[in-house]
Every structure is written in C-alpha cells, then in structure tokens.
Length: 215
Image (cartoon, rainbow, N blue to C red; front, side, top):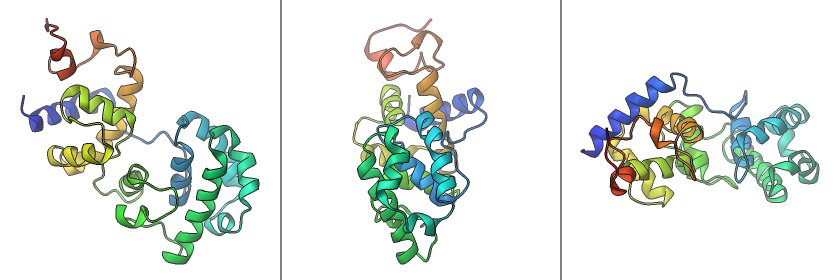
C-alpha cells in the first residue's frame, strides 16, 4: 500500500480508537510542559506527574525557577532519574527563556533546541501542544510503530520525523503522535504486541514480513 494512503488509514483508525488525543503530562503553563517533558526522559509520564505538583507549587513561575537552587530541585525530582543533570537543565532553560526570549517559551523547534536539555522531541511537543502548530514528536512509540507499519524505515528520530512529515497531513500530525503513545501502551507493545487485536493486522509490514496471513 502507498505510504500516504497507509498513513491516512492509520490516522483514521487511531482517531476512532482514541477520540481524545491529549498529552499525558500534566501542566498549566508552557514552561511547565517544557520542564515535565525534560523530566520524562528515561522516566514514565506517571512518575513525572507524581513529582511535578510539588515542584510547580514550590516554583510557581518562570522567575522562581531562574532563582532556584539546583540542589533543592534535585531533592524533589530525585525519583525521575538523572536528577542532577535534569535539575541543572531546568534552571538553565528557564534562565535562557527569561534572558534570550523575554520570558516567553519559544514557538519554533530551532529556538527551543537552543535551550539546555531540549532536543527535537521535546521541542516538537511544545510547538504542537502549546502553540498548536504542525509537529511530529518522535518518541519510542512513534519510531517503533511507524517502523512496524512500514510508514518509516529507520530508527533515527530525525529521519523518522522527516519521513512522517512527507506523508502525514500537517493538521493531523501532532494528535497522531499522541495517539501512537496510547496505541503503543494498549496494543503495539515493544516486547509483546497484541497483533490479534490490532486494527492494522492486514497491512502491518512487520506482520507481512513474518509471512502471516490475514483472515
């Protein structure tokens, strides 16, 4: 099947399965999503959501984070792992937002990736969720599932992003990535995918490569 047609099929199927495509990280302000996403590296969203209420209460605005002691932040975020580097990045990114961008979280991937600890995955999430611009968040779920379906053919996040950009309707791309996370948790698990209940069983390239027949 042509990749663009397969992409549209996937978009429609996931829209039907998950009508509400929302980020699982909890936040109220743009910089809070940026911080929560940084904490989510090598950590579950559920764990991050347990930590951020205390963090955001202690540091209620951007300026508070700019003036924070990284050691104090470390104590709060310790359970998220890599806490020293994450704490350093949190303070650094907030200072950069204040000093370089007049206190406003940037709205482009190019600007966001100049901030400490911010890569394209995080930047795209901010661009899509905060500013409602077309964005493709290439997390592990996105890379794994799009490779299995045959929409992409590389594990390199940047290349996956560029390949999906060519075949996804821009206005659907951000929500599609959120739905891939839900689908990855529910069905297309990394180790034991539930292929018997998968709506893509008949067109999944991974299944076809195994020589299984669709009935």
